[in-house]
Length: 530
Ligand code: DGJ
Image 1 (spheres, rainbow, N blue to C red):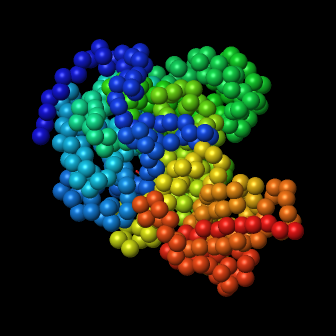
Image 2 (image 1 turned 180 degrees about the vertical axis):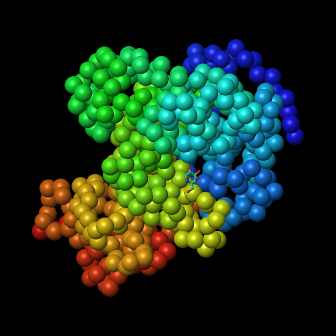
Image 3 (image 1 turned 60 degrees about the horizontal axis):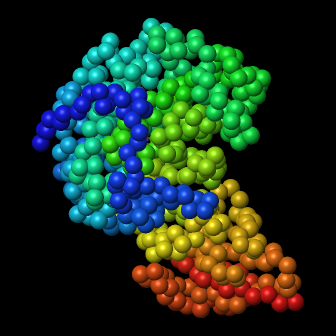
């Protein structure tokens, strides 16, 4: 169904220029929104905290409703609560000014029938550093819609972020999408967040050399950015601050004078973020869902901007993105790298809430992200290719059971994530206790879990292949001992105890032990004596 939509151009121009006040949240009761709960950020849906146990579809799956038909039940069987699906500019606006919402409506319908929520991924100007999802009428017209030039005079098949025409055209389509969502989903809230573009940045060069970029690059670094870094000097991301420091903390000058070796990446990040920020602001003026940008990460130490997309929201330029695009609520890493813990830590600086829109699969990453960082959600990529018996299924089921307890303890510093990486053991502190954690030593199965301090001397531990010895760190009697350990599950939020885990099962009163294989839950109570 093709439907012509009248969009008032001046409204869009104003919105795209960031000149419209964002729509007020209180005009949209129950709309998904971000909310600060203690030290953490929660996603509220219908006013209640909602943690995404999700998965991202292959890029092309959501372009065909028929193709999606058998996928929906598969998502339910894997125990997902949310699916991440692409909405592309080329299919939304195949002819300039004519919008086709049939696919969006079909996705909403499919998700609702299966009791799933959606995060929509707006593949507009860029996807993975290229512009392959722009409509044909934009692709064919490189003079109206200018391109980036990795080398002067050489157009790449990538729109430049230094063009208002490009930004306005993309924003026009995005505004139409958000307006449509407001009309058809404004009271249902099937769509809970929107990703703006996908893994943006320039590949093959550290910065754009198109005529507009050369002109902007010859100017002084923007006052707005310099003001931001000066105001946040004590809390800047160190890898970025280093560049500014090495260049002498200048507060005026060209990009190179102010940011030295980091100038090209800073320049690209500023203009990329401005572009995405304007699009997000224009969309939010219609319908203010939470919006984020995702990152193609630096793949190895020493990689230079351009080897990974320059200007994309890698963690070191998080401050620039914050300064340039306040309408982007957070920046999200796509984590295929093995050191999951390090990437999560790098994306929780400067108050950035953690959300993982893409990852290699495996329940262990979900447990860690939710336990350690109280993540908004976790979503393996290519979810539609996972086998029906993938361990994610059992992992998500157990996390769903535990969810009321997880949510109750968010923001209070009472949770911990556990994930075996290079070491077979580690130490952690939680709620006045030291936890000596050991992981099982099996090549292909890593230990993982999460621990929640549910009471003064009581913990719930969920996961697989982990054992923990607890010792109290607070002043008091010398020895910490196990009072009891129960295996159990949650049903409708209620704890149903199973076996009493004593003897061999707790190493003779010494440690809680979660066996390997499918994850399980144990509740431990401790006491102390001299
Ligand atoms: C990262 C991209 O963001 C996804 O859209 C997809 O192309 C994956 N890479 C493929 O591994």
